[in-house]
Image (cartoon, rainbow over all chains, first blue to last red; front, side, top):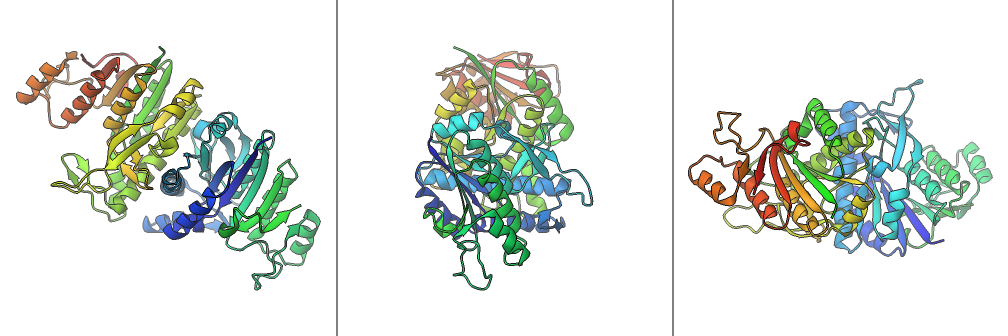
Length: 255
Length: 255
């Protein structure tokens, strides 16, 4: 099977022009088939503020009412996605920007209201990679914004880490998939105060242990859960690293 | 050759949820291969106003400075494009939203500054339909936002009528292309005050004559110029009509 690298980058990396340019330069050094999945939260919050729309987060997840859905659609699928696509095209990479609605790539259900009403937030139900694979084989590089759809005409705000994981799992049937989560640190740290305390390899038992001991922080937990889910569902390799290291293989490897 | 219908709809039609739904319902009744090209000017002006960004138009064309480019990118490629895509997916149509940057579909040059500096406005240089045709043959329905790129990392605001015409010309080598321009009226009117004075057939001589006599109004001229250019470059049929009539063949036919 061919190798496919799925790189997920957070909102902060893609927002500032300089860090975006650096990221795209490094992304270009990754050989073979690849996909970029991006976030965009801080820019969405910024636009919402300018429009007088209040940002509410619960457990790190955005409450997405109708106005906020318009904001994230504009920022994720418009501003950020197309800037990345234009930037990659300028570098000779044949990028194609997508949301989960395009080519019916990712269907989700609106998150059921229990204690909290997250609004137009989507929990992924199905990934359809038929046309995506056709394009990947034509050397198109998909750039995916964190939006899905419910097949009833609604876009849904969906966590980018989860999109990257579910896409990896679906594509693992057709490629040797390497899932690379890119965040601010060079890997998962054993000591938040020490940038050099990178955990080189993490298995799910150690992950539980570190969680219980409070070594792995709250924000990191859903990312690692997504990563372990992918690793346990046929994805060949899952790496947690930063933008500088995306092409190096360095960081925290899930085993 | 197979038939391909390229429908261009203006910003007003796609903005209001009810008229958008009506449009999409009618678009679904068009059989065979099809592409939707959309505008979005009024919504962009609206968002710009909310953000305190001044809208300046010269000869009906938007002055697109850096801030305005972000606005049109958010509105055209994000909000409007993805709402259309989600709406078509809900109707069982496998839509894919694109700008000219995606898959390097449309390259443009930043309009040279002569009397007026239009800012990030693009004049089309090249249409590359290779991957687009692959997708059309897979029954994907492209939905195209009025943005192109300069292959140097910049998105460019580009007239949707011109995009529809240039795309039609490029695809005329592979399909029998029907280009359908959709605006507020049922066709080109001989008397602006009389909705029933539709010109059924218009050739370029008559167009010139009507222009000289002031029968055809200023706003209509660039649209008809685009249409005649397409007709004279191998496009099988060019029709000017409204949203209600898009599947009927009624309106003003360019001959």
